[in-house]
Length: 506
Figure 1: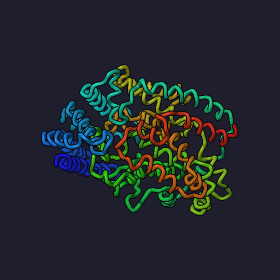
Figure 2: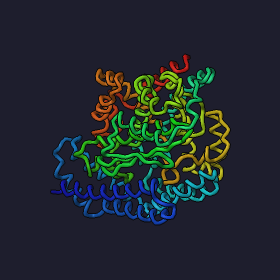
Figure 3: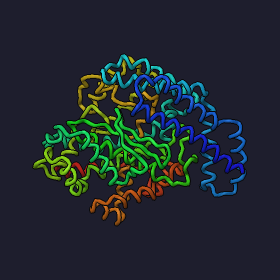
Figure 4: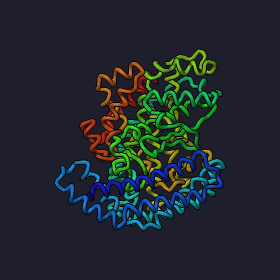
């Protein structure tokens, strides 16, 4: 009785978090600006209620009983895994006062709307006070959580359990060693033709085509929908209601297309989680208090990057799907063939915006952010110094002079919502995507499907090895089970080198 009662109580925590997700989706897609302050309080209330329900005396009593009930089960059984995750989450949250959690939620909600206006106006000074509050709250959280080496490690743990600055350094070093020569070699070549992408493409047709491609790779629109927003995101209320968003430029069609494929990859992770895990800790992040089924943000990102890039930017994909695109935009693509389009969407040019950067330079954006965040958290960099530091690192890593803050320090949504410590997940996701895709392509059905515009065998492979497991295994356990190795950048670097050698005829 203790274990089943514990499951029901965790289901109630999940319900509260899902209700918060509904409000958050509305806030970022439909809500008028005037609702910001009240919405922040509503979200904070739900988050605090979820946290208090989790750490309540009754939950701890039920957990004690449940642990005794399942003590004879296998250590890696679902029952013992759930008990262990609840125990870890309770221990984590008891270190953090509920009023700190509430303050963080309120600042995060207010911050989003301040950021939207500051970004539009390229006005860092307008955003700086909120960022000061956000950093102070995150430093306070890091001290409550505890850490061995650096306060930033405590913050990363919420998004990528076990990750530390010291463990990222060799990964970043390997990527620099493999990618810097590649980017340099590409820079010495003539760029592909891209002029046909830089013209008016009707917005409604862009959205229709993007949604068609999302469906084709496996996103289930019977259990999801696509909407417009400032900064694209995926959000789930249950595995049967998983929503994605995108943004559109009427004169740069790739933004909506690849943004939608990216979020569809996130969405499929949630949609294809084992239904038996619904409303359990195996589909709920009890530490971060998010209603998500992915084991870590990096694992989640592996799915979005894989379907956006390894699939969506592949030569094979456009050889098979370009006809539908040309039928949608016959005037804009008159005289353009699949080969020309494929080269265009793999155009390499160091750019200011992370979410629009090409694959060969993307991880340098992440290295910049991780270094800057760590310095902000430990106090070696002040908020006032941030724009200058950002611009200096953009020059160092990408050779770019940032013209204004909207293209620099104000471009990301994360700080506005209170998130510090999440950027490493993007590079981890890239590396995982390379590793998983290389392994999946060893399967004859997956390879055959990719060659016939049938992406279900690939989606089913990912479901079998990643999606369905929810949060049952750690990131490293998932990788070991799927590929026989822990996180390894070898396949990712090889993928980029092979593709760009072909695109640019290196």
